[in-house]
Structure formats: C-alpha cells, structure tokens
Image 1 (cartoon, rainbow, N blue to C red):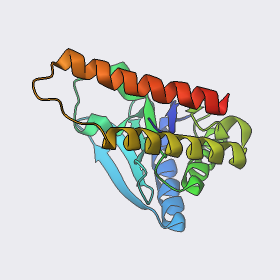
Image 2: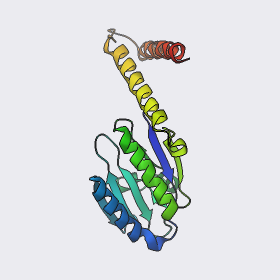
Image 3: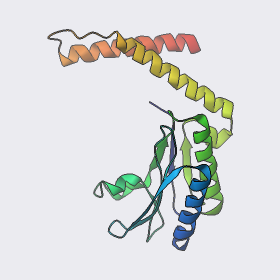
Length: 188
C-alpha cells in the first residue's frame, strides 16, 4: 500500500550518460538531496542514485553502458534476476512530503524532454498526467487514513491460543472486508 511512481526507458544516446549523470548530480545538490554515483564495469552500468529526504525511496538513474536502458538499483544486489526485471524502476513517495512527489515528477518530465524521450511513467498519484496537486494530496490523505484505520483495527487483534493458520487468515480477511465495506459506504 502506498503511492508509487513507476518509470522505464533508455537514454537517447549512450554518449550522454556522463552528461545526464552530472546534471542530475547538480540538480540533487540544488535540491539539497543526497546522491551516490555508480560506475560498475562488471554490471555494465553507470549513473546516479538520488536519495530524496524524509521517507522516500531512492530514484535510480542507472544506465546500461551499452544500450542506455535504465536499470533498477536492485541490480546492485542481485544480478541474476533476468534482464527484463531490471527495466522497471519505481520510487514510493507515500510517506514523504507531497512536494517530494511533485519534484520527482517534474524531474522525470525534464528528463523526458531532454535525455530520455521514450520514458514511460505510471504515477499512482496521477500527478504525471494531471499536474493536479489537490488530487495528489487527496490520494495521499486517503491512503494515510486507510493505513490508520487498518492499524487501529489490528491494534485490538488478539491471539487465540491454538488457532490454525487458516482460521487466522479467515479472521484477517473478515476484518479487512469490514474495513473495505465501511470505506465503500463512507466514500461512495
């Protein structure tokens, strides 16, 4: 559960990898965010990990040095998950300030206009498509409310000695179904 931005694509020309990496490092510095430069010959990747502040996952702009395809930062830990797996990048922004989400979308739009023309973005907050900050805020608020409701429901959850895994799963499903029904009636 959480608002996530998904993106994939490839740099327009592999000769621009250093240029875009340097520019992203400058932007990161201007935003007062952190970054990590990566140049790994074994994995054949080069680029930057951008670390936004306050409970936001890192943004991965790691490019395959040969093809220019964006790779997910998980490749740094697991290099045997299959080529397609690494093409899908994502950054969860749910627990970060809304401005972080907006800044990431603006950064992706900038990269699309200048370096990664074929970037494909799916924004669960709908800001990529709409640039509607009120809609984005309502999605953040709704998910925060749902997290609190579920946490509240499970704070009263009691262990039943000797309960089977199946019975436990049934109880959890009943609680979540009740929450879903109440929410559906409340929000139409």
